[in-house]
Amino acid sequence: MGAALTAVLLVVVLLLGGGLPATLLLAVVAAGFATGAARGVGGTWQAWVFAHVVRPRLVPPTELEDPRPPRFAQLVGLVITGLGVLLALLGVAAAVPVAAALALVAAFLNAAFGLCLGCELYLLGARLRART
Image (cartoon, rainbow, N blue to C red; front, side, top):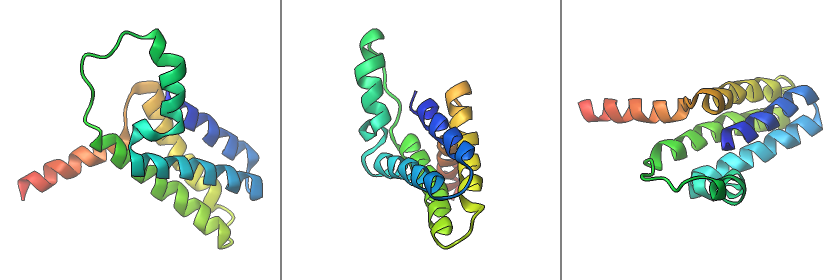
């Protein structure tokens, strides 16, 4: 659900095109990723919406996933969107739509197919560290 909400915001960023409104909305998305990277996915506004709107309608889970891969994914999202905001502030007009498009691909894959690219990067890094 969090990825779907993020995807919607990123689509709005793309629809806004460039300029200050798109940059500000991308900064909001980046702030959400920063919260997720710092506090974990459970500490985000999307998790709050899920906990109060969706979770009460579901059967409690029997097991929970390791929080490290999703937290790393939040960090990846922060780097991409944060870099887009920073470059936009430095005058690179294309930075906002490019960053939004990249983040949108990852958010869409997560929302539609349950494929978390950042989580997969985390697991790949863990496998590489285990080999050395």
